[in-house]
Length: 201
Image (cartoon, rainbow, N blue to C red):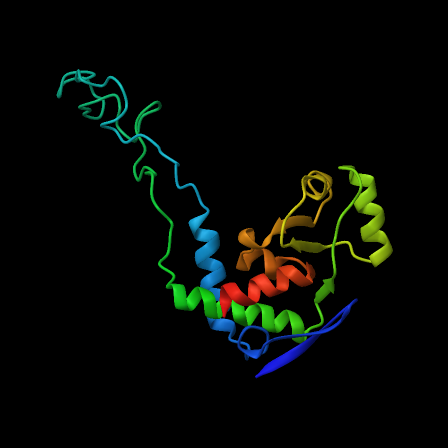
């Protein structure tokens, strides 16, 4: 079973399994959240009282000074002391099965088709790696927030897109669920759509 997508060169048949799947909000949320969590560095670190240098000597004797007893100047109560619940490096990654990831990508692509947010073009190229050329092309298409997917990303398009807010140019290998969900419009070449169909079928 297949469905038709309209392109400038005419309708193309694509798999209904990839581009005609029912929407599953819980699945999309879990996969997008897991993908974003995997991108976190998790390198934050603070020092506990045992990590702070110094504090080996008892600041003053236990009794007779009138002050509260203290065993170290690196206590969490002291200035320049340690942190009570110090942050440690950690891995924020979440386990996402391959079947779940593939199914979520199918759901997202299907929803883009249903909402009319997927636009097909035969090719998408610019003559020079200049931002103003790509900006003019986007203005002609009436698009200000778009993900450009090409089967083979040219250096001209990549360089021109880097300085335009909300415009991202990638190839099919770099397609991810967060980018598909974040952009209002997805502009893909026919060859890129065929590659995506093969990847997520």
